[in-house]
Image (cartoon, rainbow, N blue to C red):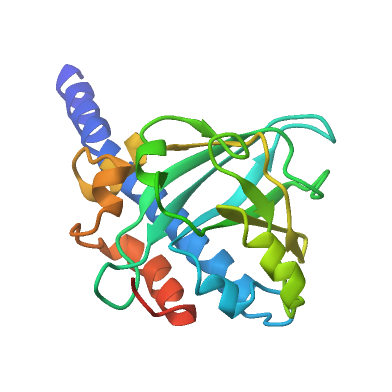
Length: 226
């Protein structure tokens, strides 16, 4: 009996990393799916010329809400930045998003959140610790579909453009007061060792198979590098 118990314990403990890998792979796959669905509706999605100005993209699929009108929100996603000196997007770092209610999506069970980082300066260092959107980094709801040039120019003054989608509705949304920080445990699960977000986003880290659906879809809709 003791031998059976020990065997079961060893199996359980050894399965931990495998379960973590599966969870993070699902998160990355869901992020890729959410971004694909958003961009598949050109008249309602993120304008291509706006996406092309982004140096990094954050996707948080299925962000959960903790209350009606007043309540917290929490979600896990990933951030990927354009390749330096090459086409496409680099390996993503895993992030967590939390804080106050997410814009107009009141009462929704889950909301997909997308953020375009227009100015990468400082994003690496900010991800080393939790920071608040609208405080350390200016954020504004991004233009959707065939927005006017004036609207787009006004939005582009912010360092980060934010969007949310729930129940098929997609719009630019304010995320002021929401916090963003790296998910160190998920980074370790994805890459098999402890890596900080700034190390991953600096480039030079091989994109693991589980992250390729996300980097591939970003490359599909905005292939240029920096």
